[in-house]
Length: 112
Length: 118
Image 1 (tube, rainbow over the protein chains, first blue to last red):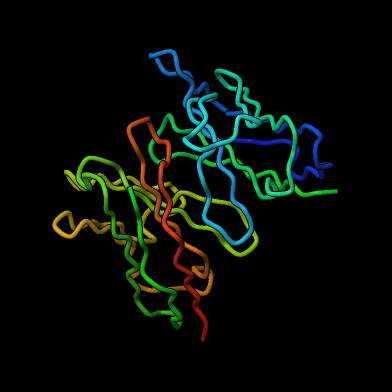
Image 2 (cartoon, rainbow over the protein chains, first blue to last red):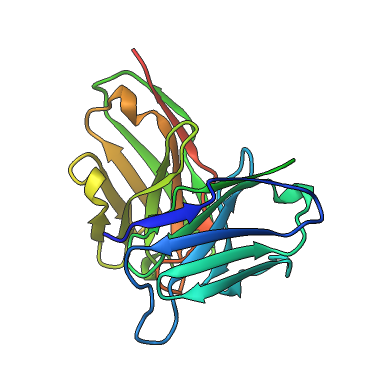
């Protein structure tokens, strides 16, 4: 099984400042088609998770462009260019190469 | 794609339970649909997943033999079944629908809270 790790696990942020979360997989998520099958999800308080980023860097429909994903193979990053209060929640990376996937432990983003 | 789950359940240890997830707005038989557990205050864990078109089912190792996932393609509904609940099964359970891109979850159900207590 592919094991996912994230850092940091807790990220206090100042509104308007950038934020960055790292995700690492125990095996390469690079498919033969050239895409890395890594997703980012956010779970806001009291809500179901929702898709932010898929294939490592593609924003899901309706996701603001302040969110960006990068990386390939085993190392990935989610960046928020300017954090808003509404971005508070737990951010999970998930490998989508194998079905079912595997989630990382989650990174809690809250406001300082 | 829209997924609607059955309501919250309160059960006793040893009882059986089946919760459901009804899909609409897409071709139910063409996409994987699965279940994710979230224990209180914890992260997300894949339980398993089913392809309703041919009923192929895959379980995460931790859940193999503990639950059963099934689907009724005639009523566009997926199920998660326990034959004998334990207190440790108390959790929120989400159904998760994959789309056309690998294992990416395009749509989530609203969650079903299961409480197992004597």
